[in-house]
Amino acid sequence: MTGDQEFIEDSMHVAIIMDGNGRWATERGLPRTAGHHAGIRSLREIVETAVQRQIHTLTLYAFSSDNWQRPQSEVRALMRILAAQLPSQAARCVRQNIRLSIIGRRDRLPDPVLQAVQRAEARTIHGTALHLRLALDYSARDSLTRAAQHVGNNGNGDFLQALMRAYNADSPVPDVDLLIRTGGEQRLSDFLLWECAYAELYFTPDYWPDFDGTKLDAALYAFQKRQRRFGSVSV
Figure 1 (tube, rainbow, N blue to C red):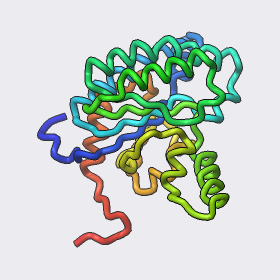
Figure 2 (figure 1 turned 90 degrees about the horizontal axis):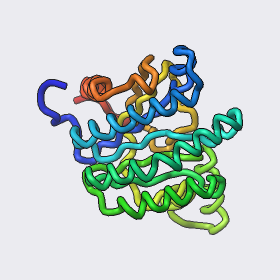
Figure 3 (figure 1 turned 180 degrees about the horizontal axis):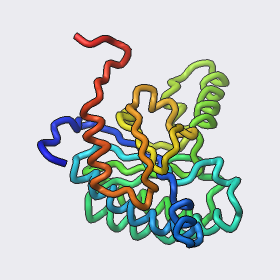
Figure 4 (figure 1 turned 90 degrees about the vertical axis):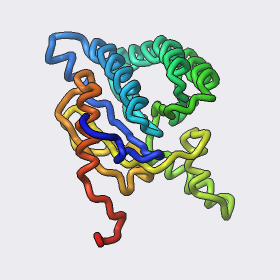
């Protein structure tokens, strides 16, 4: 990216739907799991670029609640990759002063994944350069429903606090400013529906394993050109 980074606000929140791993692998005659392994490399580069660009919060859609419907062999492989990669990702986060946290349900995660999640969160809790959030077993509609039920059952209460509790967030974050989806699809797929109320949407045909720091910069540059009015009018 050329020029300064003034358009990136101190509280900027970027969310990414990391789509296209399986198709990337299939087009190369590889098993779908090879695409997930390739996607880890992109994740690392995007996180490093986010730190360099001084992004405040980066939320990545790693596994949706609907993904449990995929073939069990692929789901098991994904869970093994998560359990294996979280410790090394946590170590990188510590070196880069990044806080790593997980949002989504935890009661259905396999024990090795849940234990890796808890250790990674504890190890990186003091990171301040970037708040990296991975959405695992996440469904925005499920979270909204459970938050509404909690408030209704108690007769009062803070809905946003209830929503955070519903998807196991341990601290509030800014609403999403820029939502990126790779892989050519143009839908939200039940991701951060509340937080994306005024997000700028950016869709790219690039599969996630092909999405790198330069392409993140292109998305940020496109964001810079948007005029955000939040329901008001230009003056």
